[in-house]
Amino acid sequence: MPRLLIVQHTPSPNLRVMYEAVLAGASDPAIEGVQVVSRPALGATAMDVLEADGYVLGTPANLGYMSGAMKLFFDQVYYPVLDATRGRPFGLYVHGNNDTTGAVRAIEGITKGMGWTRAAEHVLVAGEPTTADIGACRELGGTLAATLMD
Image (cartoon, rainbow, N blue to C red):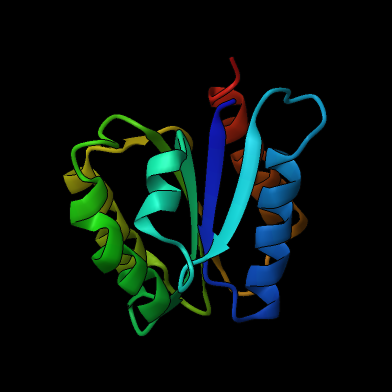
């Protein structure tokens, strides 16, 4: 059964709402035959990444960069999964109080180096998430899960 791995760092209420929407979209009953696994960025391992067929990444934008937790995740898994995960699809959601540019740039650089393929539009939110933002997060999770359906 294909597996979707959600790796997230969710320290704020705004990110919690976004994460829950991604998880709900990925777990939609209409999407059959895909196992959804969620791990906090500080607990996700190279084995989690190797066992997954696609990924959704969620992080705050902290001081113009991804969270330290997400950076540590990438530092720990980059070389152990590099060759084995090339071409796998991923999606991204980022929340910042003002700007998400630096966090997105950093994650895009890392995922490009890993050879992952962007499978959906990023969901980038500055400030409080709107109803449309929450819908976009749900769609992001659903799109990534549907991409993996048998």
